[in-house]
Length: 128
Length: 128
DNA sequence: ATATTAATGATAACGATAATCAATATCGAT
DNA sequence: ATCGATATTGATTATCGTTATCATTAATAT
Image (cartoon, rainbow over all chains, first blue to last red):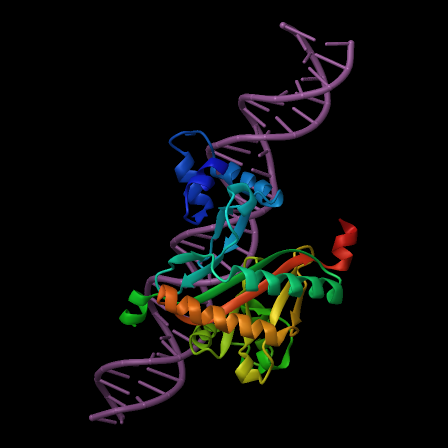
């Protein structure tokens, strides 16, 4: 499972992973896929995302993948997702400052953040 | 519906709204609530949020409510949600710059962004 | 007033995820 | 290795939010 998530740049759903695994593991059940994803997500080895299409999507954690931090740009027309890695420095600066202050002010132990931009890609904007 | 969303600071689900409306509109169906929320969301009068608990939550749009821009701090233990309005200036600066550059670079027509922090509130952190 | 169209809501369908539970595998102690 | 206890697996079923269907009702135009 980690292997599959490591090889792709897509944002796979539980079922996608089940399908991808099926040829090599034909007796693996969907239940176990869900269970294992839960487990891996709790261990912070994979990240669960919600892009608003009613199913969870999974990515290998950046540290595991050796990847740079990124966020998502989502086309609400065709559901295409772009990972962007730009503006990293200023962003990280702000996020960390915000995180620290929010943690103090609201006594939260913050483990995670999410930043997404929604809009229409070129083709979808035209089509509208 | 707009009235109900305008009066509360909570983040109501479709069913919450249905229940809130029921005393005054006993023959209003849940289907119509969903339909109307869809409509209002498309008109940008209400915003649909996903806090990761498997149902959509709705807020009256800030312009409609006359509210300041805010983001959400979510306790993954008890699902409590805190609206925070801090760090507005630096954040808006970054978000707008990012938005502009992303729009240009990826030819996106960006309409929206989402920023959330996840963590554990004081009580849930203790309980863990 | 009547015909056409749109809005409503009850019901059923759908789809993602979670719960159940029997079967199987793993592990620890002897 | 053997036996018993415990944990893992996956088939099946249940759950729950949301959407589709469709007959009924309301609104609108002629």
